[in-house]
Every structure is written in structure tokens, then in C-alpha cells.
Amino acid sequence: MKRYCIIGISFFILFSCTDAVKQPDSSDKSESKTDSFFPVTSFIKGQILVLDSLPVTPLQVTTVKGKSDSAWIKKNDLRPLLLPFQTPVISETNLTAYFKETRFNDQTLNAVTFTYDPIKPIPDSITLRHWDVYVNPETGNVTKVYLVKKIKENNQDLTLQLSWQTNKQAKISTILNKPDGTLELLKEVVFIWDYANMNLPK
Image (cartoon, rainbow, N blue to C red; front, top):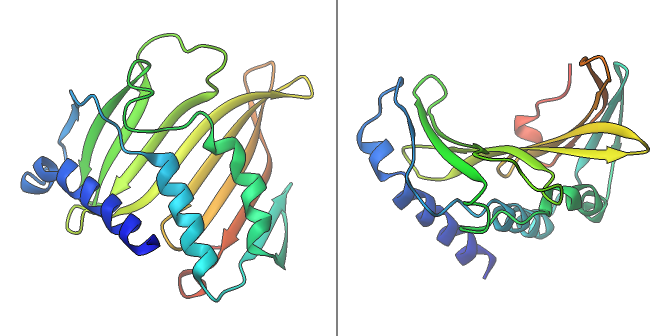
């Protein structure tokens, strides 16, 4: 069942990217007129199911103020950290009133990037500010998703970033937005389950 879900998502992307695949221009950047977005939340949940099915123990690398510590963790330990990125739900249509889709075909990355940005003021209930979906133009498979959220916690303005590399690893960054406009990386947590392609923090 999990396999069929993944295949279905891949076909969705493949058909969505038909024009980009037929016209691989590295300078091609255009706003899409689509009224349907890629279901990022379902994709991440599907990736969690895939991870649950693998006979691996994820490695967690936590970096704070330039110092990194690593430890083997249980798969369920990743779930609570991903909850903030599952709301609001990014489905096919629920956010089309607030965000626009821009498509960029970058041959240097061998990816078609679908970028989503606000088109009007966003209600306070929506903490999502931006997201990207990277697609391999040859296979139509999603290779990476990247999400940005703005939240308030303990009277601080924080930016949360999730970078999910399909079937490989996930990175969560917590950034402090200081009153003077500067940014400070407070914490970075990387979860790795594809040891053959490890990309550890430097």
C-alpha cells in the first residue's frame, strides 16, 4: 500500500512537470496558472511511512553554536519534531488563495523547482511563509522539499526551516529573528537514514 502511494505521488509530479521536461531551458522561470499545488504534507507523511518500513536506525546530529553531537535514535523520535511542519496542511487546493507557484528549470541542479510565495497578506493562523519542491525532470520524482515557517515562542520571533531530502535525510533549523533585523542560528538538527549518502553539518 505504501509503495502504491509513493508511485501515485510520482505520477502526479510527472504529469505536472510535462512542460518543464519537454522544454529544459535553464533560464526558464515562469509563474504557473495552476490552481492545484503539490501535496507536500502527504508527501512528508509518506516519507515517514517509508522510513518506518526500513531496517535502519537513524543518526541524529545536533549542532548548537558550532558544536555538534551525534546519537542513534528511535524512528519515532523524529515524529514530534516534524509536527510543526504538518500545519497548515499543504494539499492540492487549500492554500491557492494565499500563495502563487513559480516554476524554475535549473539544469545545473538537474531539477525543476516549484517555488511558493505569498500573493497577499496571510492570516495570523498561517505560520507558513515559503516552500519549494524540487523535481527530477527525467524521472518526475520529488528529490527534496524545503519549508519555512515563522512562529513566536517564549516572546521570541523564530524562523523554522525544514529541508527534506527524499529517502535520505531531514534537517531542521531554528533561527532567531533579532529586533535589530539580524539572524542567529540557534540550533540545527539533522536526521540521517541513508548512510551511503551522508551529508553531515560542517
